[in-house]
Length: 131
Image: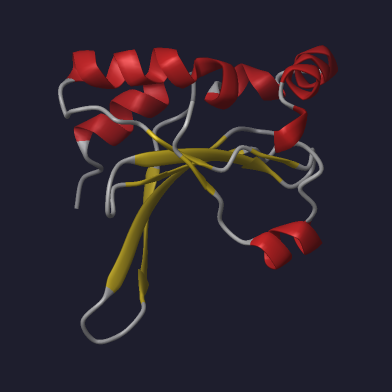
């Protein structure tokens, strides 16, 4: 099944490679579907369309996790680009380009730093809808 256009366009607008679809069957009647885009250093953009379009960035190596942000957009390319522009400081792939970019991100958004694997297990997926 092809990746939905809003997912592809959102990733593209934020400098991420084309996303790949992933599926997990929770039960005979319930299946989770999400999309991932990974850059060379292992940072990942996660997108989900269920129950609404949300996105998060996670880098285990750099202990960065932005939590899931509601894109609050329609399905047109224009609407998705507006949402990407709004979330650019948090989700753009350039955050992981070099040490200076990561330091700048950490200074601007300390609440998204220090996400170790232990903390991820303890606190789980975080949804943040107030941007």
